[in-house]
Image 1 (cartoon, rainbow, N blue to C red):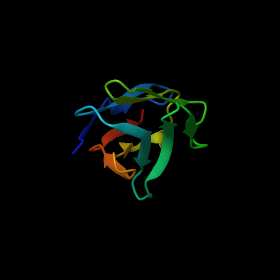
Image 2: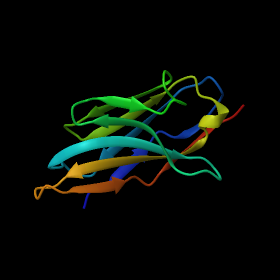
Image 3: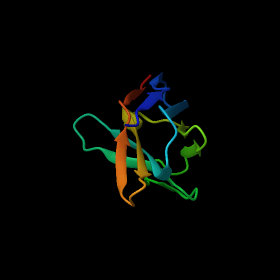
Image 4: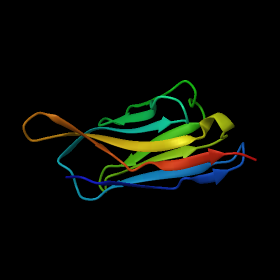
Length: 120
């Protein structure tokens, strides 16, 4: 089993920045993608940002231009740099690793979630 440990959440004022980190507890065979989801109160979980094994990134329209996803595949760790934060970015943020296994299948692992609150 792979455990994902998140850090970096907290309270920030509108316009501020935060950097989230998510590290795997051990090395992995092969990474398919590394993702950040978020879930605001009363809303469904949504995909905020993703980075593929080739380094291709994609973002939800709501965060495009403000958030940047990056990774360190050696550790492996994924980061989410969040700038120009808005109150609507308030949510629990979850990291997600989709890993390829030796049999050609894929397995999905989740972090425990970290609260990000944007408020003055």
